[in-house]
Amino acid sequence: MSKGKDFRGPRKRGFDDDGPSFDSPRQFRQPRQTFDRQPMGGGFGDFAPPPSPAPVGNSVDAVVKWFKGDKGFGFVELSNGAGDAFLHIGALQQAGYENVPPGAKLKVLVANGVKGQQVTRVIEVDTAGAAERAPQRPSFGDSPRPPRRQPDMSNAVEVQGAVKWFDGAKGFGFVQASDGGKDVFVHISILGSAGISGLAEGQPVTMKVVDTQKGREAVAISLS
Image (cartoon, rainbow, N blue to C red; front, side):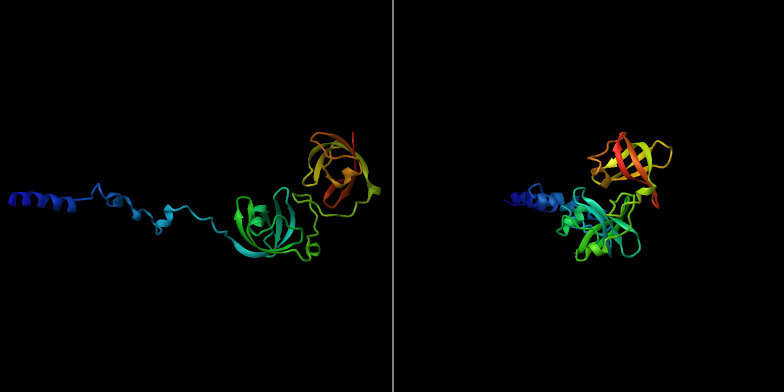
């Protein structure tokens, strides 16, 4: 009996004390948890699905320059003098909006994106008095032009050319003039009176063109 006790005793002591047991998976896996590999604090959060990233940026007041709900984006003018910032529809939808009119007053978070300043979150939306606050500086850039007075047609000259490009969604495009001069700006508003629904790239046209502060602009157009 003493031999049996001596034999079982060491076996029991060795089974309990010498290393992890295969009957205890937690003990066997525990040494593999190397938390010291996480230089910035680590923690169990690294193993869980990450939460949606919090919007970053600085809070600033802004006024909507233009926003196209069908295109899903637009631009706002920042009140801090930093210029314009890109506004994606996703930021609006998070605030419960699908669209905002020109001149709407916003409080937003702005951060620098790959292509410039971008609204990362819309905090407040105030559409009261939007028409009065709408920017009144027309541009031939990427933003659609607000309603404007018709240029003086008395100085218009006839120019022929071919459509360089025209974007019906944005409401404007340009024609490459055959007289060798600068490209001619064409606003969508002059197409309806000519019975034209759209312009295709390379399409020949005849225009009545005037010089403006922004460049040459067509005041009338017809298909050649």
